[in-house]
Length: 217
Image (cartoon, rainbow, N blue to C red):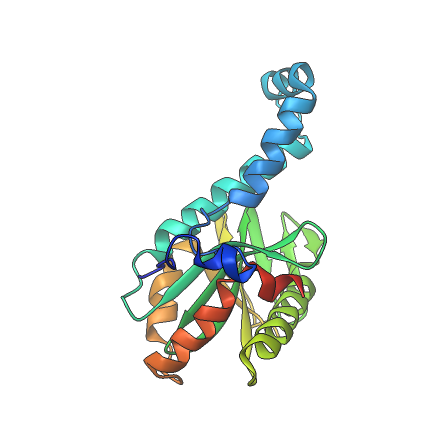
């Protein structure tokens, strides 16, 4: 898998920052660190007592993104991956944007430890509780498609994928418009997808996707 980076100073001179060097989980890890620094005593007590806090939730999320990032390293040299992609003017981010011969994918990592994840056509549940992951992932991909299409000057379709880390993953029916894949299968699943783009088109999209200005417009 290649990630690459442009010449030093080139992106700054052009008015954009290169996202290709971002680490998996970087955005949420920074949030967890900020929360811990803001309330160090509360953070320590919460960890000792096993109390769930925003700091802990962000840390678990970051761990999940790191694990998915490692799985994505198995992809071949024709693939490009960008982690922790900031989107819009707020603090939203896409965990992983993956670009390769089969197309463009927005990956949303969900780390539920030993939890039970159950998926049907219109619902995803964690330990029996409904989650908005399907809707959110579809929206994320639509948003990514809009930004990339505008930057590239041609239509860029983006497929939403939820990568699950859990004790069990049960898929009763494939959800509409979203792929749900276990973390161990993600690189193999991507690699087996049929090719729809050549190397030149992959690089064209990657060149725009790596610029933070593409996602901040």
